[in-house]
Image (cartoon, each protein chain N blue to C red):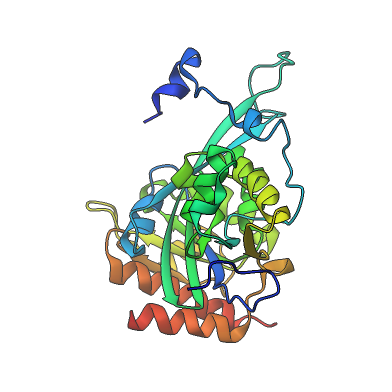
Length: 121
Length: 192
């Protein structure tokens, strides 16, 4: 099922994703992908003055969380979240674990740990 | 309690790895993600610009197209330091360029197949073969579907003999986990 705002062009969210990022589509700092892990460096109450969406990111990343999960929680396109994260990274309000290594080859111990986990969890 | 963490502090963030669950529309991708995920499958959306280039039927329409593509995903926490994410790929062939972004960094893929619509799996299989992304084929045994042996499916899909084929029930956690383990073992068996 499509969400109502996808069916009715006049019912789009009040703030379009591009407006939140001032039209930017790439982060100022950092390279994020859907499974980049993000952690806030401060508790949420320190974040007065941030845009509401950025403050939400800080709230949702008090424990390590992936970009995909943040995008789902905030109901924003992942690309928009990545731009906001780039700003937060530049302000040192988050730390991030770089995306999976180039070519995405997970090491043998990692693969073995995942197998073990799937069998025993 | 630490109120401020800094880049310099040795913050240990978990390693995240991902596996793709691919296959045609309606084959059970989200069902499988939901069966093994510790969270209810979440949905992330991406707005794509110019998504229609070369594939839309609206010939002559020059305006940019904005397409929203949704992916369902789930999570399995293996340990404090290791988290596995499962992404259901969008079902439509035309979004294969989005798959590039999804497939990048993936350990491998599960191609879910339905023996009643086997030929609809070809696009997916071709894609992973061309990209050299390791994959297994998991035949989702729908109630009432013809039962084929894995060897039949291997032959019908013209798979490389090294590509594992399994029968599964995408609704079942144990069965779906078995498929994921088979994929990981397949990846480990490949030459580095």
